[in-house]
Length: 157
Image (cartoon, rainbow, N blue to C red; front, side):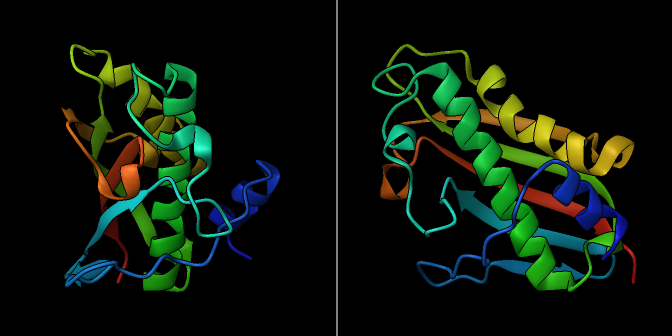
């Protein structure tokens, strides 16, 4: 087991099986030393979205539940990275996260929601997890997920 997987274990985080795409795209692309991971929803280990992570943040989904959904998305990003690379220790750094928050009309506190994902990536990767980020509010997300997160990682060959 590698350093990153040891850290996941110490944080009591179990990576689920990587989710299959739901449309005409691939879950990840490796180009040179970059790994791009398609947007991941807040799917639990059972492949379903927790009812508390369905709907609009600032509406029927609390800020706390929104942060938890973003954290779940980040766990799913790492599951995709594991599927892509085989060894998470090939991750040199997280370059960028992109967050999409299914926001109720008038809700503008997206950055703290996205911290659920950002904090998890830094917790797992340490300084190599510090990243650039964009976070936007959207009207709808697939499966009515409260959050979706995509990632760009620099990897070792």
